[in-house]
Image (cartoon, rainbow, N blue to C red; front, side, top):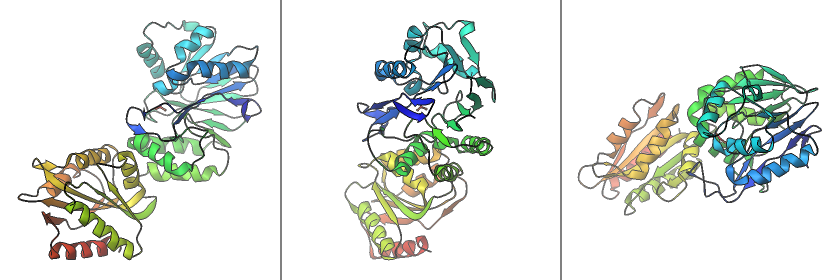
Length: 385
Ligand code: FEO
């Protein structure tokens, strides 16, 4: 049995079958859907799991409970990776009281059209409401938009545990060893990144709590060096760059734009700069977006296409704009053989982003000219200042 503390048990599952998490994110090391059981005078189950793992999860819950039945099912988040097994749970344990925010109860009605929860089996958790289990007292902290509007987190004052919903989650199953920061950053920027302001609000609430353990809905239980994880969340959610360096994101049809991107990368590396270079058509878009937010400088290099921007670059910029990209230095490289317009179009897409320092645009006509090489020298100088 997988213990978090003497009376809190891990009952989640690992998913190595998922091809794309949330329908779009590659997860080479799978995904975990976490769930926990608190055993006290009363017993509580914290969230359910994805629909493909209901049976395994119910077995995990039953193994921890033994002869006992759960008194409460606490639903912190209604996205189906955590909520899809609610109906199956209620069939096995119809007497368990479901605890959720009012918004979550509305969504329960939307997701489970044929399931009725009697009024005496519901507790609507108001913000900062408490629930006594015996020695454990749970406090429900509403966390709207981290990452859906109905989300709440739960603080257990006995073991000083914060059940943090999607917060502090990461890609990757728990039976695979990997570094936390990288896949937690890709998860955060991709999935929660739009809601920095709301994450900041939750971090302020969390700062008032004495937290020893963080139990997220994805990824490992965090027990040590919590300041590291909380510090990263503060950096990400305040849209500050985590590291100094330049991300060069490019698309290239016949290799000429790629050549410019590579040349710029070489020049920057020669100056001792950190460079991440990515071909947006061939490499993981989510990783490119993650890196754009990780570093303080970004170069976008693309071709004019159908009098527009090459599609993968268009998609990349939409990802940045939707996530409120800001506080960075940006340069553009465009390529066109008769009417280059990509730079103007890219800038227009990004015109409402806040606190962007724009460097001079490099315009290539078909292939790199001597003048372009000098412009790239100057750009490398500017980026390494
Ligand atoms: Fe892990 Fe927003 O669901």
